[in-house]
Image: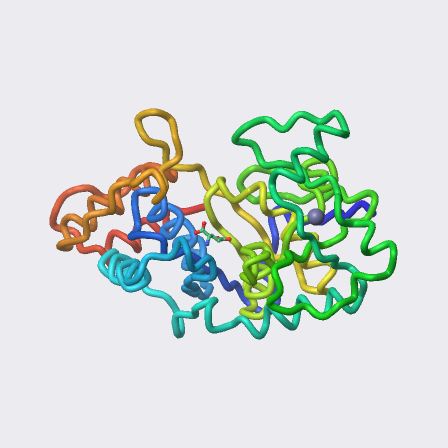
Length: 315
Ligand code: GLU
Ligand code: ZN
């Protein structure tokens, strides 16, 4: 199956209106990188007269920091990035993910996997495939025979197995990114059958994000380029779950002085929103990262006025 999601370039506004979102994981407060992603998706939504939702992606509980969700919300508010409606929390939406998972299982698309990382590398080595360090390993389908033997349609419970989706033979995903142009990923050779529910019982980001974006009617996903390599998996899941594929726009990443992406893991410093003047300075830095220029400088402008100018300048 070759899935081509074409004609996404220069979209006319979708019939049901633009709906964007910012979906931070509460693993720490906002830093320059996450603020740039938030601002980019906010500007895109406002420019298009759309809605902008805030969704806290707090499924990976071991990585979540208590209170970070509140911190993120106050930082966004301090920067004038108001969201529409209630904040949603993935931890409160798990029945939806379970339903989607069971649907796929009933269609015979899932199989349980008990492989450790070591089992996978051993299997790859036996196939003569090197697994470069620091690179995502492509799952070679070690447990897939369970599916072929017809034993996979078990009940998905809390037992210690991961659940993977079995990809069709040809699974090249083509899509048009609104910022980066034509993109293509062959899921079999670059990812392999991927996990939708982990052995520790947690639903994965790939499943939850797809279910939520569809359930919340998201039409435009504007986010950092670090998430680009997940997009093909998400489009594939949308297809098998019968969801519409939203438009994607991936924004340039903010790099530190060593050329590394800023992240909460590398302890990037949180933005300073102690008062309006500091928040405005952070916003100005974020727009420079996003490549916007010609915005009003000077101290006498309010955040609201400045955001209006930034929205006009956004394309
Ligand atoms: N929660 C993800 C993150 O913070 C982003 C999800 C997304 O925008 O698709 O990296
Ligand atoms: Zn396995």
